[in-house]
Amino acid sequence: MRPLAVVTGASRGIGKGIALALASAGYDLAGLATRPDPDKQSEGLYAVKAEAEKRGASFQVLAGNIAALDEHQAWIDTLLERFGRIDLLVNNAGVAPLERKELLDMSPESFDRVLGINLRGPFFFSQRVAVTMKKLLEEGREIEPKIIFISSISSRIVSTNRAEYCVSKAGLSMAAQCFAMGLASSGIPVFDLQPGLIGTDMTSAVKEKYDALIAEGLVPAQRWGTPEDVGRAVVALAQGGFDYSTGAVIEIGGGMGVQRL
Ligand code: NAI
Image 1 (cartoon, rainbow, N blue to C red):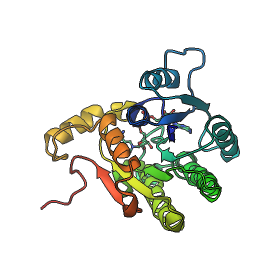
Image 2: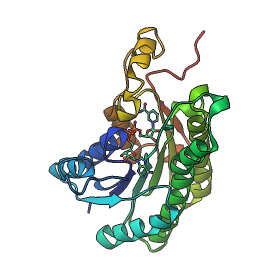
Image 3: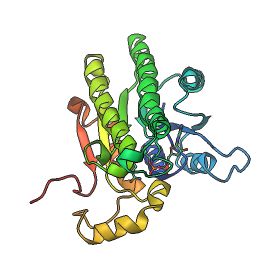
Image 4: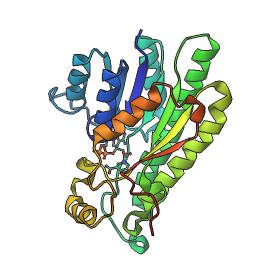
């Protein structure tokens, strides 16, 4: 029986790259997105579903908002009913501020929106999924439980024109550490992946700015990262070789976060 991975924000970008890499690696998938596009089944999450199925995976579409905590248990119940297991949670869904504003102009509304989606939602979804994983383990089910947080290099590197995003990601990285410690004795490894500059819809608005910075040497690898770069890293962790490294923080940034002189 294939293990089941839940990927939040799987309809495009990094989440899509992760979902398809996991499908190729032998996982069944549940993908969450705010707009899976039920009227246009050839786009969004349904397109990812079709591609994953070509790779042999069963795929459950979950439509919802990660920030709406009261929706979480219904998603988990749907998955337990269909698959009877949850092996891997990848907390990938996230948003940038609607508008980049300098620190002293940023509004409480933008702060609450970004923190709600990027931190509060994944924190409490992870809590519920971890409770479920522990219960399955206690029942003697042979699952391969792991939780991966997709935070960001912005957990550590400051951008003053999107402080709420940086604060949300720093909080998410601490959440990963807390879950790693809280779940270590239960045999549930937890990891924090910190992507650098990855070419997706989220970064398309600032592509030219970062193209220039990459040309000037910001990224030692001299290129944008891709969703496939992140997908490969997730598969490497999912396959179990790093289980004793719970709490590890892994940058996927082409060397961008390494301090240089
Ligand atoms: P994207 O904007 O292309 O895709 C975001 C995905 O999250 C979509 O599937 C969307 O439906 C889903 N989503 C957004 N809000 C949601 C909500 N409230 N509830 C449920 N799903 C929701 O973004 P991208 O670039 O693929 O980023 C994915 C994650 O990686 C985000 O957490 C982002 O902060 C993080 N990241 C991205 C980097 C980049 O350079 N693109 C760099 C570092 C981290």
